[in-house]
Amino acid sequence: MDLVIFAHPQRMGSHNGALLQLVMETLKASSRPFELIDLYADGFDPLLNAQEYGVTVKVGTPRSDPLVAKYQQLITKAERLIFIYPVWWYGAPAMLKGFFDRVFTPGFAYNFKKMPPIAAAVKPVLPALCSIGACYPIFLSQMPVDKKLAGKRAIVVNTYGGGAEGFSLFGRAPEFSVDKAVLGFCGISPVKRISWWEARGEPIVPERVKKQIEEALAR
Ligand SMILES: Cc1cc2nc3c(=O)[nH]c(=O)nc-3n(C[C@H](O)[C@H](O)[C@H](O)COP(=O)(O)O)c2cc1C
Image (cartoon, rainbow, N blue to C red; front, side, top):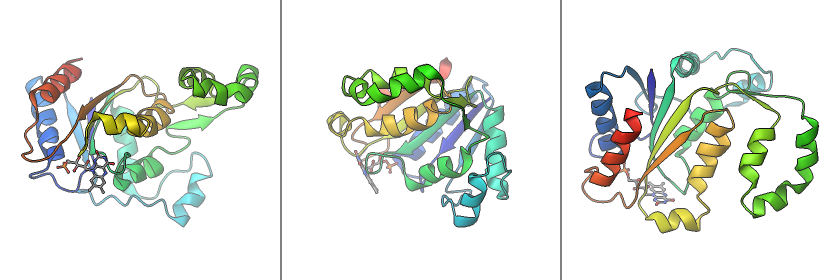
């Protein structure tokens, strides 16, 4: 089953709404079963509050918010997660950030393990490895984390007001903060990233983006 996670306040008339429509139509046309989480329409509260923070530090404690429990069940059932959201301040909207804070909990999405000796040995040289771009794959393979969402894959579809140069200029921040630091950290791999640059004016999905989405969904 595919799970579509939509994080935009407006479905009608927005570029993200057009992407959601395209994704759902494509999945329906190929008879692939899917479920939709529309975070704003659900009225999801993205704030990890004091009471829930107390629970978060006690790994494995079930959540009292039925929406969190429902979302975790949907993620468990899903083989692939499809995220659709705009890039705001070169990151995810607070709504999606809060979804990760409250739903990708320790015990559900990951668990820390004791650090293996090789990881402990690599740790001091990590900053140097990072500076030559070799850090991420090494760190990920050695990370003392039980990646509880391993076996799932993801597609991340983002819209930007700016162009590809902004993405590079700001260090590919949307990719690092979500695809790697959240999804990869919890074992979700591969993550296919699709970008709609300069999503301004009429919300009509450009052919290039449409083709990329259709190809990715067919896999
Ligand atoms: C709060 C906010 C922050 C934004 N930050 C960025 C940004 O960092 N980089 C960028 O390219 N566009 C930025 N934008 C523009 C949006 O990404 C763009 O308007 C949106 O992707 C268009 O899709 P929509 O019609 O579905 O909202 C921002 C927009 C808002 C409202």
